Length: 589
Image 1 (cartoon, rainbow, N blue to C red):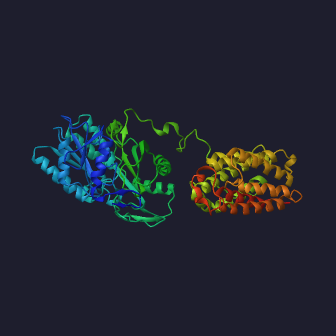
Image 2 (cartoon, rainbow, N blue to C red; image 1 turned 30 degrees about the horizontal axis):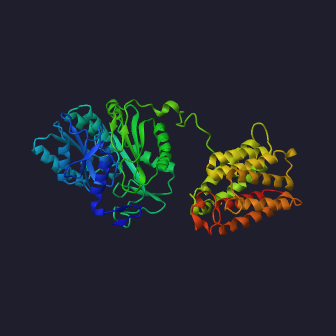
Image 3 (spheres, helix red, strand yellow; image 1 turned 180 degrees about the horizontal axis):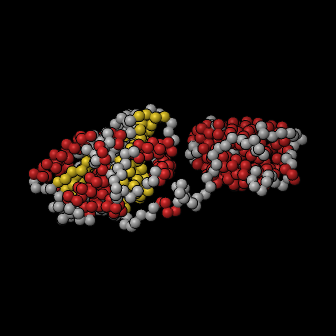
């Protein structure tokens, strides 16, 4: 037994048996083990008179293949060892367990081992009198040349089957479930394959059960475009792709490949597939741009699915599959199914375009905070101060994240930067809006609300309160007259608000440990000009923030981590000191 870098502990020799048994235990209501075989068969099978749809492939790709067995989808799945085809004997036994007397459709990815072993099993079944048809899935555009003259793909061209096999399995399963004969089921499965294209990208390799190192690697900071699900080489390596750039690469490699027969309705089934390590939120960011690009190309995404369908253990990456729909395929894609990994309820599809504007954005969404902008030449004092704070904190975003991660969740840097961006936009809109210039106090009030909304979390609420309370005090000044005494009053009000809202006290390793000495130093220098006093007070805050390294956290989740934070300054106190120092540079006596 060994522990993989992904954190899983496996007996590599018994991995296939162990996970299949666990799947059958967990989803006994839907599937059962095939006696004497590494396979599962649906509880609904065999059903007399129904074509049996048998799929399969190697372990390591769940939900493919065993997770897609159930009414309305596949009827059985034969499972091989990790990244290896099931043997002909395993395929034969699995198919026998599902056969209801109306014939067997075998459909699987176009890999040499699968072709040979499924082929041997099909020959044996045929010799015994069972009618068997085969449809290979060949959707991966990166693995071979395109079809000639718009014809269906010839499997001999070596195109692999990847995530698009879900579409083929779904169409075949729905056809068989409604009672179609074997010839019809095979024809429709082949048609689905001909209408399906997939392109994928990987950011990191995968680690096999029991292995101490990844099976293959991808250079940090790069993306392999077109890489296969077993680490097959991609078409090219690229650097620094954003989520939108990745989406563009996926779509660009599919649009030119899409078949466009006369029956095309403009609808495309869409599957954005995670390869094992990519988080759902990240995939949704990618899908946002995929959706925009498809609509811009005149296509209508139909029943889009974002999730994991064909994985590769802990590989980081995604693939995009498109199936061009005609009315026949649409009806089958809409049909219900119920499997351990995928469930589709009966009912029509409501196109996403029904409640979206022409450019693909929702018509009823909250305003997105503006991206960071450079200081404007006409910025008034509040906006200039917040812009300077944003610049300073953004320059230390990674450092703040690392400090927060010592005993927290590591999101402080990115959260405060996001909040300050929104604060700058709100202040600029208030100070230079159509109603004419407004007071610095009003600008800070709006900025505090915007920061809290955009940043979220405890830090967002505290910083939002700090800005809003400061604004409330400054708004009382006649003609925006800013004196050191007024700034001290504002600092006192901000301190009270933060202390009351967070419930913290000085010495508990929070931003109060920097705010407290700041306000006292500011109050002690009311005889000085605002800039001189503020800069001196900011220096006190900076020293106090550094001294929090000697404190043990006593608030929030960090408090439960004991001495873990000892020796590291508090992220909140550090960011506040950066902010205060930057603001001081914008003031004048």
